[in-house]
Amino acid sequence: MHLRLLPLLLLCLFARCQTKTGMPNANQTRPAYALAIHGGAGTIRKAEMTPEEDAAYRAALDTALTIGESILRGGGSALDAVTATIVWLEDCPLFNAGRGAVFTHDGRNELDASIMDGSTQAAGAVGGVTSVKNPIRLARAVMEKSPHVLLTGRGAEQFALENGLDTVPPEWFFTQKRWDALQQILAGEKKNAPQGRFVPPNSGNPDTKFGTVGCVALDREGHLAAATSTGGMTNKRWNRLGDTPVIGAGTYASDDACAVSCTGHGEYFIRYAVAHDVWARMAYGGLSLREAADQVVMKKLVEKGGEGGLIAVDKDGNIALPFNSEGMYRGYARPGERKIMIYKAE
Ligand code: ASP
Image (cartoon, rainbow, N blue to C red; front, side, top):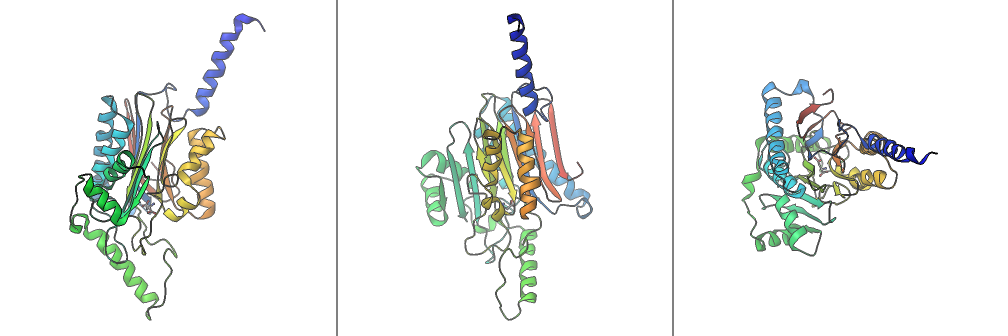
């Protein structure tokens, strides 16, 4: 081949690689930033939502996006953007995280959260905390101020106090809607096992609207981060932990490929290491973000019976938001682009 043609050939090859990882990043060059959020996946049907509820969720997602986006637009880090976005979603009573968390079988709120920095692969997580106002702040403190990755229960609460994090009384987390959901499930259990017979947990999905919150971001420096926070699943027992505080299951980030935050029936997401699996299919298998995320959520999880979804952003700013449930509260923003969606047909 004529040597003068070589640069042209290389250029074509480069452009082809870019297209393969593309979608839905329209301009194919890395955007200055990219941000995606979720507010949980589950049985979310348009027919069962009032226009007021629909509008309230969309407004909340919009505010959350604005918080993260303003940090990224100003040159802030992906880590700061996901932290601030999740803090706001935890304080918003509409979602199953922080205030508005679901109740355990014993009528308590036990909160889980995790965060991962794609540039260093440092990670922090907490499980089963009951008094920390913003579990995501605690997860970040675990990552930055302890030699550990995952703290649970009383020890995690003690670590929160030692690090000056805000604590609140249990009433802070209470919402009537979540309390009623627990009472409904307990009444059903009583009816099905009147003599106090054992009813296995998760024999069927105890909560039809999961409501966990998550955020993934790519910053101007090309760094990725992911964060997830939840109250878990209604009627959970025995200090059950789901996928949210498990790095690799509910949350994962690595600058070489992508950042992922999951929501759904946690037991499945743990068994199939869902967040890490998306990363692995990209890193080892050379798949695009969309291919990797779709294979895991729409094929593998569906085959296994694991309901839920995830949000992910890759190092080129592509975004994927697949879910196999009826709906997922979700949204994303890139320079000049913003979208908020709830139902499947959006
Ligand atoms: N994945 C969470 C859990 O199993 C629940 C959710 O996503 O809403 O704890």
